[in-house]
Image (tube, rainbow, N blue to C red):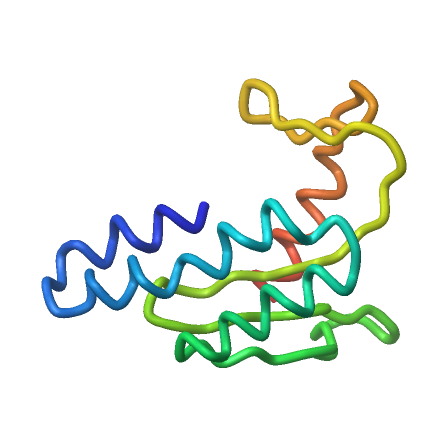
Length: 116
């Protein structure tokens, strides 16, 4: 998903180097954010790389739902939702799986929040 933004940035030559450099924080988040502290570290890296990070945003159309983090920068827009799932989490054939079960509904909820 984040690489899609970098690929789209390739049509604007001046944006491409900044998008590539600024994606490092997201790669770190994928490997280090097993907990909330890891997500905080990764988002701090994003801010240091020139991204703007918005936190705890009200989700339009909802009385109580929030979007945990939205990062906006040279590589695009990334919605970050930190969930604690005990057990193995994998991506297999384009599906996020937790303990072998597809988590499509969770991914759809985050994607819906991103589009709100």
